[in-house]
Structures are given as C-alpha cells and as structure tokens.
Length: 330
Image (cartoon, rainbow, N blue to C red; front, side, top):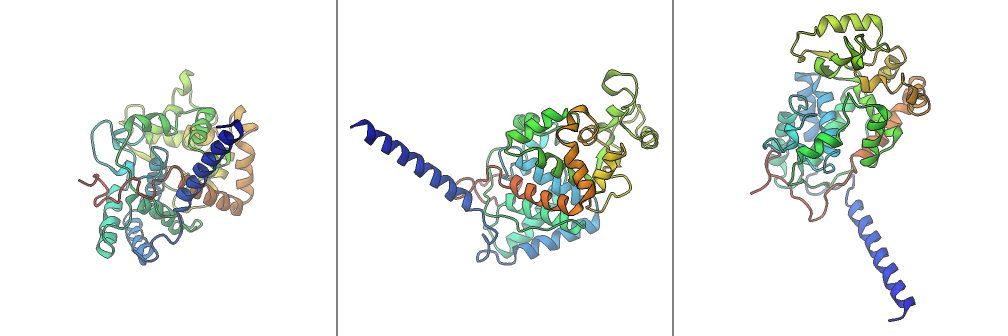
C-alpha cells in the first residue's frame, strides 16, 4: 500500500466520521414529534401554565432544571433520576435546591396518556424551560427535539461541572467553556435570574464576613444589604429565600442587569459580572449592552438556550425513552 493511498483512506475515514457527527446532530429538529405526538407542545404548555399558576416561582425552577441537566452528561434528563449520594439530585449544587421534579412527572404522565413511549424526559425539560420563559413575559423559540434519556446520573461530575454562586468569574467562564459555551452565553444565561428566588445560604457569605474581611461585600447596595441582613441573620438556618431580581421578581426582562449596575445583584456570581476588575474587559460591556437594549438580551438569551440545549444530546439508538422520568427502564 503506497503512502498516497494510505492518506486517501485516512481522509476518507475522517470525512465519514464528520458526516456521521453531522447526521447525529441533525437528528434534533423542531418537528421531531410532528407525526408521533402532534399535540406535544400543547400538552406541555397546559401543564406548565397550571404549575406556574400554582406557584409563580416554578417558572424559574423549570429553567434552572434544564440548565443543571445539560451541564452534566449533556441534556439527557439524568438530573431527574432518583438514586443515592452518587446521583445528580444528591450533588451539592442540587440537593435541597433544584426543584420542579413533580411538575415534570405530571407533564410526563399527560404526555404518556396521549402518546405512550414516544417522548423523552429530556425533551420535556427543554420544552418546559422554554414555556416558563415565555409565560413569564420573555421571548419564545422553536425548541430542537429528538433527545433520548440517559441511563447514568453522575453526582460527582455535577459537583465539579456546575457553576457555583461562590465561584470567581474565571472559574464560571471556564465551566461554561468546558460545556461548549462562551462568555456571551455566561452573561445572557445569567439573565434567567430575572425571575425566581435563592436561599440565604447561597448569598449570606456577602452579608457579614465577605472573603474573610470581617465586613460585608462592598459592592452590595447598602439598603439592600440591611434588608438582607434582617432577612438572613447569622443564626438562621439559611433556608429563607430572597428574590433574585429586586423590584422585578416575576417578570422576565432586562431589569436583572440594571440591578447589577446599582450593586443589587443578589448572588456573588451575579454581581461579579459587573463589579470586578476582571469584568471590566470581559462581561461588563455585555451587561451594559443588555441594560441599554432588552431586545439584544432576548435575542442572545434565545441563542444561548438553543446552544445549551444542544450540549451532547443522546440521539438515534443511544439512551432510551424512559417510562418514568425518575428511573431507567427495567
């Protein structure tokens, strides 16, 4: 076999691998269930509406559920699986924090009644996240569908892969980069904090002894600081919640970024997008652009949600369509 022929075979193999990759990626389509479950989006929308009417905060919880699913093993519904300490539900970023599992169960039951064994739990989480944004006053988009459910839940990976509210900006950016996302995705997806609440345990580090200084975080608005100190005293258990977007907690808009301008970001990971030296040449200009242009924020947020929803999806014969979102099929 001559050298030229060997190289031809090599490039042919690479080309086939590339085309196979494109084929797998293209299996996610907006009309994936057009024939097999034509009323899918109506069924999901109905259940999400009921869930948000029952509890406004659930909209933010369903968006976060999608985020925390996609960052670990890709968007495969692995966060929904029940199990022990090594499962994602029990990981530090998720336990007693991630919510909405019962809502997904209800959606799954309704969908199964209409088209049994067809729709993955991973796709239901993605659709529910989109509907939660839309029903809170935010933008809509066509969700790419065709994901299959994973059979492994990795709590250890969740502990290191998911961004933490205590992480510095470079660590957060690095974790996004590891997932195939960029700085714009960091800032735009952080805008999901325009709705929802967070427990005192996730921001009390800013209220009394920030970074061992013996003083509160100097970037925190003084009036907001006083309010939060009263809400979250040092002797409390840390489970009381505060709104993430002060003065605009239930409407999906660009007010979150305006709060950062005024030192009113609730989590450290929110305010560092604007008020750190590193932010000056990285995230701060993006924040400022969203303050001035809500349409730009909405557009970038949609792009980032679609991009995030495409993190390592299982398609074709990979994975399964779970009968119950909480357990793998027997």
